[in-house]
Length: 394
Image (cartoon, rainbow, N blue to C red; front, side):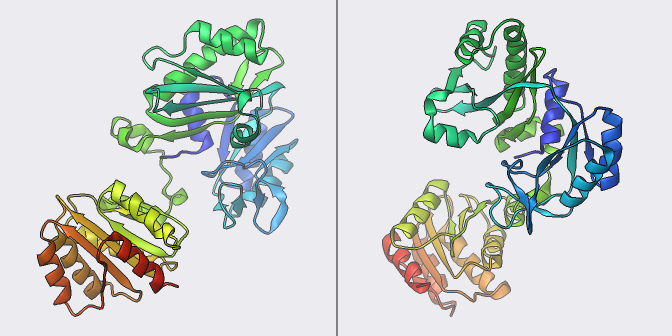
């Protein structure tokens, strides 16, 4: 789950991590008032969407309007907010369609002496969180990793106590951080790592991390993603979820108890089991096709859930064919076959449907399909099914 920058900064502020003062605005007038309340000579107006690259992003059909802009008066804050609110912001992460800006963050100016990068993720190979820092703050870390990976410094840490003092000193030495800033760095890093662990983050990224003229560290930007499996422990974080920023089909699938991720292809996939779903997408691509989604109905889905899965698939206008790939274990082939028939009756199919069934009650499932009168292409094994569904959209 993702949250907005202003929400992430509030979580950091509550944990004692230094962030600039800021105010959220949903209208140009609120932005002007926020500038005045902050009381400084300069401020920054920042579009709030669930995507990175906002500083270089531009408003659709207005390449001169950036997603992050410096302002020096209340009137400027009002004008920038007016140019952003209600518009689609296109960044490197949104795709050409962009994302609608519904609110902006008006933030006080900062005395920037230096910019760094800091991020925390889980290193599954080491079974520990890893703290990453780089001198290349303010730039896309993916670019740094691709072209200058040696500039990314890493320190694994024990989640129960955070990074040790010697690890912080080692990072500071490599980054050329000296004097009183080392003390500020320890407090900042410890606080950040504690937030990461305590809130079940999957990603916590500060880019840029600023060292001020007085030597203090401040999170000038913040991105936080959370492990969905841990959200039951954090009801207050769940309240921060902005459904308008999420793919509607993915939200609908989650509410139904399905695992669904929308992709860019034209072959819909309905599969039971995450591993089989990934293998199905791979074999579709192997034979020249492009999957339009990842969809795992799980091992215990009922007829209603599978029928809803078909509704979600067929609602995607890009879908030109559907491949159903079921290996019946806990999930019975008869359940899928019955759901296919029910979905055809209630939703209707206007695209080719290829079905491959194996496993529990497979013969009964195939009989249900053959006696249904529905035009179905039967796959004799996964390879045959993949070839047939790719051919159907050629």
